[in-house]
Image 1: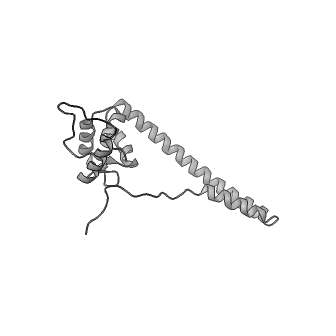
Image 2: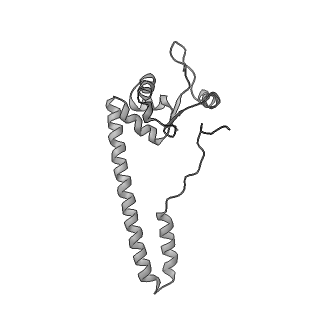
Length: 156
């Protein structure tokens, strides 16, 4: 999950500007869109980053507050609350991607329907087609996502 500083760079705004926009529009960012890392998560992340990047000296170069992590939905919402030209372009790209995904899903549904018709027509004549149809149907079925979410959990 991308952090606020990574997304600020992507959108061409400062981290402070990004976090202020989020706070002004907090009702648009429920817990499944964004959450703040806890101290342990940030410490683990910091140790990973310190192996890659050396901290710079000077005022304003270190974080005062724990960073926010954003899910895919949170990233999309960010593009609608930020006022930068790049954020506008990202928002447009996201909307176009959603349209393409919807079209792809509809075409897969149509393909699945045609496959069913074809299977009924040819399965009676040749049982070997059953294996082919099953393989195609598995390719059309999206794989389940696996993994665990960072930072979520309910105590008690």
